[in-house]
Image (cartoon, rainbow, N blue to C red; front, top):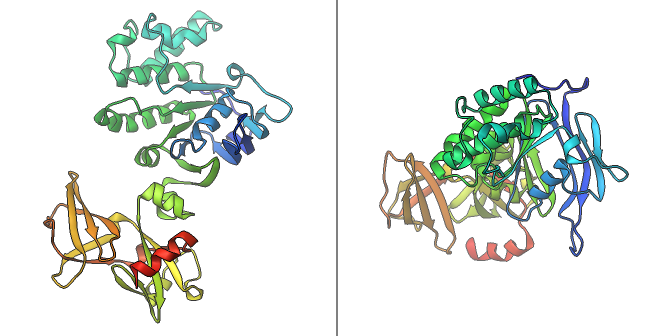
Length: 376
């Protein structure tokens, strides 16, 4: 599928200090966000409800005006303090959460709806290309109600791709689908966008969806950009406690410095072993208290009748077990292990972790009081 020729730079999207504040709101919905996206890459805007990710998508699309900052698509400024380019002139395609297909039009008519200004032969060629691309060849005469949810999603994507935009925007594109269909279409969606050579930005609150589809993940919180990077870097090297908790769903071990170690609810961790790894973010030798992030899959369990830590619950997740562990002070920890060995609920277990997998964060004031209870 041919793609519009970009200027010399392969920069498709460039946001510089973009801010949007709605009337009557005390704080901006989007606050000084800067993001770049290069040709052919996929960016996920990840965050919980109300974090500003959909507002940012609408700003890029042209459905909202920024109060400050600059938005450029394919090196052309489409919005700043002085100018604003309407959505239809930005070279941007849009896939809405509910697909927004016209029920009285066929698949072919839905896809070519935005190609009325093109010569008929050009529109027909584009139609055939995108139908093949999304795996719907031969289904152009069907109506939306005759399609499955996954097929409707592909029609909406085909309609966005048909004009050959510089950039495709997708608002929670898989959220209306059943779990099994959603899992299958993750890979399909990425494959289609890559085959089309089109850059894309999609909004999601699903961590696995963002990590599996995107080349870059931008984590948002309260209108701010917390971190942006590859899925591997965001998951493996979270820049803040919020990112660590939201993206990895990790455990956090409050730790008190005790001589040559750090005392936690799972035991004392060796300072020397932790310090030799570059995974920590702060100067541990200058701190009295820390909070260590440890991912669920990095905890190891072994039966130990002398341990005060007990398996409170166990969930079978197919390829793995998820254990809920009760510690003496009351803190719950979660561990994911293979299904090779099933430990019964009520088993006392020793919990261990490799220092290599730990990341350290400063203890916030509201957590410092809890520290005395957990590691007293």
